[in-house]
Image (tube, rainbow, N blue to C red; front, side, top):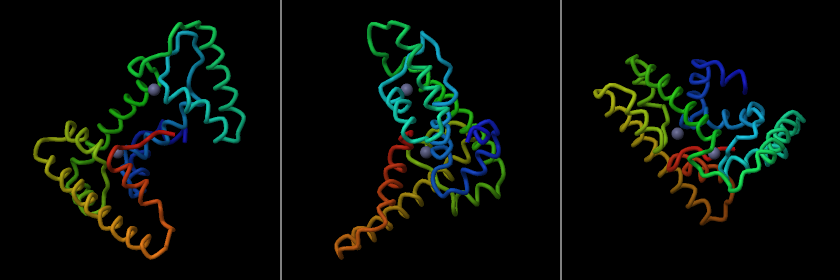
Amino acid sequence: MKTEASMPSSAVNQALTKGTCPICSILKDFQWTLAETTEPQANLRMCNFHVWALARSRDKLSRSTPGESVTAVFLEMLKGRHKEKASTGECSLCHRVLAEEVTRLRELAQRFQSAMFVQWMTSQGSLCLDHAPKLKEFVPLRLRASIDQIMERNRSELEQELQIFREQLRHGVHGGGGILGRVAEFLVGQRGL
Ligand SMILES: [Zn+2]
Ligand SMILES: [Zn+2]
């Protein structure tokens, strides 16, 4: 995942094939690398979400490296002797995620220069309600309607799938709950780790 994140265009290309919002998909992978790449510093500040994400990354990854690096990060933070917990705005991991988001939005916007790509995105691509409006800020005005089209197609596809899922539940079939996660991602974007 580390190499994917550091190779710009291939990360976007790979994410596009996953059938969900490519920016969400990249950020989800990127969040995993934070546990390994955060430099231990006494002045490091982190939000509630990211401190817990790092604490839990130890359980989720069986390799010892993330556990060791998170331990080093936490030790330095304790040595920093902060008097209060950090606010969300101060979190350096949030800042890194936001910077990654802008980089990837720019790359995706560049791909929209190709008419073939726009056509592909309109017929098959995915975007969530968080990233579609953000992407609009990076593409020329004339392409903003295409982004709305992509979003609307995603919305109606998910609506149909959810209707089918509800019918199945009514008939006692409880498999296929993945649709709920995909609807959540469409509505609010990726959740992180
Ligand atoms: Zn997204
Ligand atoms: Zn944060």
